[in-house]
Length: 164
Image 1 (cartoon, helix red, strand yellow):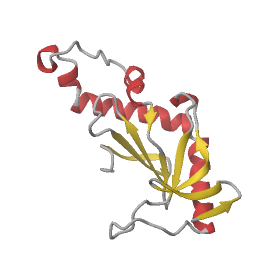
Image 2 (tube, one colour):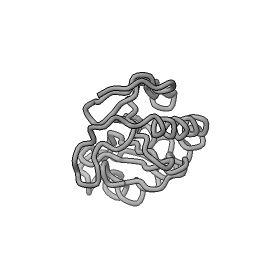
Image 3 (cartoon, rainbow, N blue to C red):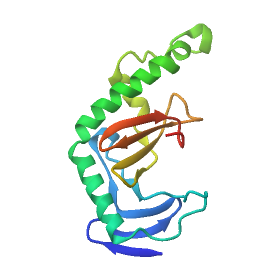
Image 4 (cartoon, one colour):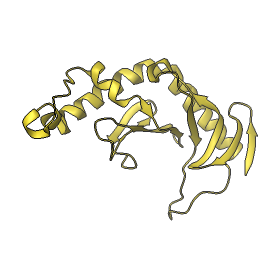
């Protein structure tokens, strides 16, 4: 199924739901063309959603995404702070201690250094009610990754992929 939208362009069924024709790219993430998914991939029963989002939903997603882009620099700064705090809490005791990890310390001592480990965005998912999910290939924890959940451009949760 596909549809056409004034902002998103062609919206079509893709490997993880419905994707937009336009992509996300930002200097913060190496200007890669990152797929934008619109709406949930699964319904409340765990079934794959096969109905293309309505024009009203697509308009709401447009508003959410446009606001996200306008506030992106501020969001990135908060993302740097919160993900670095999470690193210090969950991972630093291991990766910064050669005796525990058996490897040289990573020397992740600032939020800027840590940000280099979270630049590989898998995709962006725009959801209802101003929510956005950003799953990222996390170089510190490649098994779980890291996912950031935003609501109205504020970080609501940070966890492993599919945990927020």
